Image 1 (cartoon, rainbow, N blue to C red):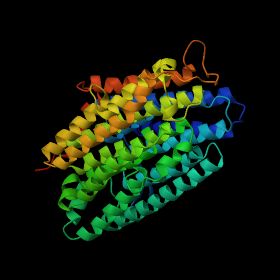
Image 2: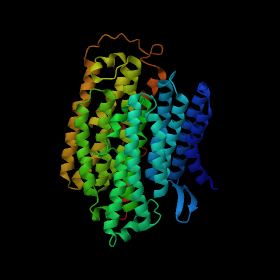
Image 3: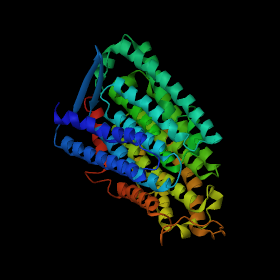
Image 4: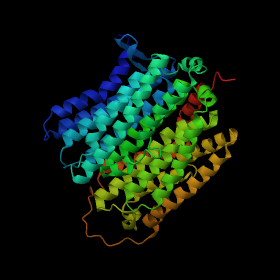
Length: 500
């Protein structure tokens, strides 16, 4: 086996093996469990960085294993998959540090960290998938590996949330499977990037391909939380903060959004998708979801639920950018895949810190919390400004390119959606910022969970500080050749390279 092929397998097993071994450990073997978690997370970051450097040097990375005639397990590196793999690996390392601090002394940590590792294996597998079959396998494995995380607390609310989560995701997976089978029947085994196959079939099989497209889109839209298939997401907020952070920033919702990008650009091709009028319904549902999620967020007093509805809204920026044809809008959609991740994980870390340190779960309880937890709330404020779209935070860059893309495509209603969404973002995030910094703290009878002179334990504080800085740096250095924006623009240029 060539070294480059082996590297792809090593990226996967860097989290798969720790997850399996952790399941075999005893609950009391804390040091061994933490070592395996951190070793696997650091190893994955190093391996992805190694592949990233090799890709920039022009090296290719492919692994193919034949399961049966016309059925292959395929891993492959392209720019889009590499961008998602980098996001997954870096944020997994940060979340691992956070989870170790958050769950210290808690129950069932062996089970939690085992499935935590399996979850990131699924996410990385989705990023590295080279064909539709491999993508589907990892996509469904993600459902199975995240369910134990959603029900981790084991109470009635958690069990009910897990049941709802399974109904939605398994239902979506079933619909996606029907689409994958239909695609195989019509076009045979499809590798990502082979858009010419669908283009050649479209003139004579337009109706069948349209049905397949919307079957696959519907299956992906469940995890992408596009209205009306979003209902599982707010209910899943009963899960611990590290799980919420992972679900919203890296794993489940990003898998759906990433799949939509693959479907439009790497399976059907943007030109064929537009010629078959497949993108207009996606644009309409995404635009509605953006406004709907923002309005629902405005009325939530529960901190994590407000963030959950914000995710529903913000994630549909990606789908909307995909549905508007043009290099600029595609750039905005792809870069928001990264920007939304680092901003939203910051927010969930902050919400988790407040809840774990002071026991505050509602926004109405946050008066003066910025004075008690300045580092946590500075990071949250940066991320909130980014979500609103204020420069120089990462979210401004995403919205700017989406707006430019809408003007370029002459879809001016999208500009109105973006403006309305930004106004609503301000309406439900700025009151949190105001309460945190400008309201007098209310008396608390709770003994804060602190570590020495810091506002909370170091393992909870360091991750939110890092991701808050990432959110700011991604905006400040967007013009750099090493920024997410730079790679997003290169990916978008590739999608439109051969179009007339």
